Amino acid sequence: MDNNNTIKTEDFWNPEHIVEKFWNGLAEGKILARKCKECGAIEFPPHLACNECGYHETEWTELSGKGVLKSFVFTGILNARLELEDKGVKYVCGEVQLDEGPSINAIILGVSKKKGREIEPKLPLKVKPVFFDMGRYTTLFFELDED
Amino acid sequence: MVQNVKLGKNMRSVSIVGIGATPFMNLIKNDTYHGLTNGELFGHAALDAMKDAHIEPRDVQYFFHGSANPHVLNHCITPNVQVADWFGMRGKGSLSHSEGCCTGYIALEEAVFAVASGAYDIVLSGACDMGTGMPDGNTPDHMRVEMSTEILFPDLDSIFDRAYGRYLGGGPGMNHDDWINLYAHENNLTPDEIDDVLNHQSYHMRRAGALCPRAVRRTTFDEMAKEAGYDDVWEYMKSPHNPKMTQYLRTSSDSCVADGAAACIVVPTEIAHQFTDKPVEVLATGASVLDAIVPHLEKKATAEAARQVFEATGLTADDMDLLFVNDFIGSSAFLAAEEIGYLPKGEGWKYVLDGRIAYDGDKPINTNGGRTSYGHAFGASGMADVFEAVTQMRGEAGLRQVKKLPKHVFLRGFGGAQNVRATILRAGF
Image 1 (spheres, rainbow over the protein chains, first blue to last red):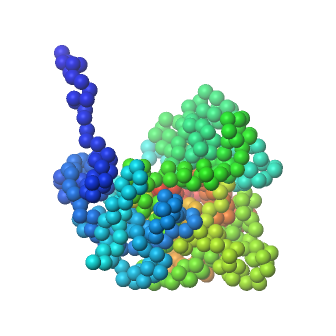
Image 2: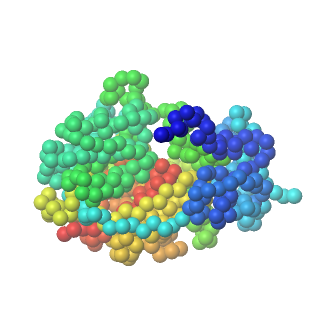
Image 3: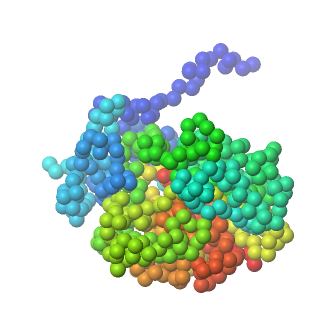
């Protein structure tokens, strides 16, 4: 006889809210990722399984947000990020490799056309995180780490 | 990413025996075409494909309808249901699918699966999008108005990951120029040199488009330069008449949005000659999908899909006589050609400057003009490339016929930020 019919649905299936926890973390200045329990690769941004080796299980870890900018492009009328244009900030889009390993396409603040031309021959360059208030959520951008 | 996919052999070989396509057009601005609907466009392409295969609608057992964005562009969610009656397939099985601008290539892959499995013998697969307009409110389908930027621009973000990538922001901004930027640095090419390469590529694509009656842009850049008062077309290409839209891409390297449909009929190869004396076998399709947050995703996914299809077929890029690349990002054409080995690594740009990728060159790409000249009806673009590939393989491309009748054609599908497909066709005659 199946006695499970007395169990509340929420008691037998109650997964973590991965996406929600990630964004709540950014609001607190924390960069959360997942770490593969088999190969140790960092899954960032966090997902359920590991995309490096294809293992099913990962666990929470926290990243420094430090890394290097490896390449970048300026945007034009066709691909401008309207939410940033509206705020009048200078930015480029580029590949950031975090110190813990993963690489993502990211936004790097504070790079004007003039600055961009200066730094391009010097790539890769160190970057650090910027926890950027977008109003209803806080997102993760980067800026050059010139300290 | 894990790269361990090894394509198996289909349960039975599948061939294309019929093709049909409307022109790519601007339904909003062209008085002749204004008022045509999704059902009519798809229906004409479908019936043309059936006619080409010498069959009637009653003979077709199942169909696929592909569309990049049926909800915004046509205010419907299951267009297969809404078009079936237009070409005599009421009550038959069908399926809608939507993979952004890769839809038309996946349309072929899906149809092949349906026949290769043994489930069906005669399958229609088509794709239709009406990119220039949108429904004029809650009105019958023929009433359409120009797509507004207020609707289009915010909606474009819907192809990017809503959990993370869209709001971390870098992927959407890298979408157009990531690969050409990487290529420029890897090959020590200056911005001016890249500008020349992309302008030459657009120039040659337009030469093909000018010869293709189904292309939406048919005026050559030579004619446009002369009209604007330029004696030197290359000066015109770098002028304010052809402004930069991104860091690297000028208007001439951007896709031209259009309305249109295309379709094909596929059957088991063993019975293909019952329908045509020039069947085209679909040998295999490699597939890779990477979200826009992944750096250099187009390069990586193209390489992976190509690896799969070459491994499955035992062919190499040297066996390919013609290449189609979904180049709504203009630079994709020669970059993908290099990545799959159709052009030598690091030298593709020279082939472009020398015009060798033109329809009359020795390494032809996109003989219909590609997205920058043939036009871009989003989901339908891939199937329009299949139409052109089969037309070239049959030797029926008229003035834009490539010099060597193609035995093998490679199609690199791309879209939806981003799905990639790599399909190899073989002339079965």
